[in-house]
Image (cartoon, rainbow, N blue to C red):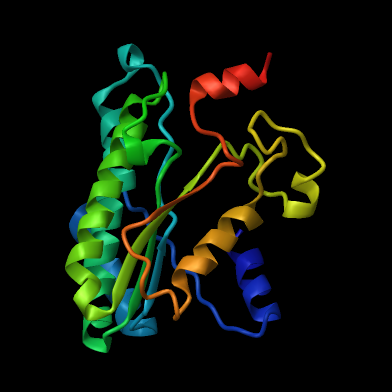
Length: 215
């Protein structure tokens, strides 16, 4: 997968590097690797934090390891990534940060089987919005993208439009729908939008609405 991504980047006329990093490792080890990457390839003016394991399990069947996976994978990883990249952005007076939230997390919306995951994503949103306030004077924006139920993350928009889905738009979502939202938020001219959550859901609002679509 990294090789294919790098090949696509180079085909577009840009350069890229890939570095393996497990955000569930010891925090000191994660920080060490992040700081080494910044010294070798940075400083960076953009952070797109696409980390976040999905923990789907009813609370009665959940374990403390599931809790750790949800919160360290989604929240602690964001904290560590921000700690590593924000200092250089402050010095430069410019930065763009985008985290990945979850459908409904901005409103603390609950879904069966997602007790830890949804709670972690809601915590991530509060963290990001607090950063947005604190970092705004330095020219840094902090926003979130919340994808909906995109079951096949490999298809492009052309293919997605051929598939039906249980959302008001009526079609499946694609990686291009999500990447468009990210590109919008990281653009240099987007300096007046910060602390926002853009939901890429095809208009899906609630689980009840989704069930209604199935009738």
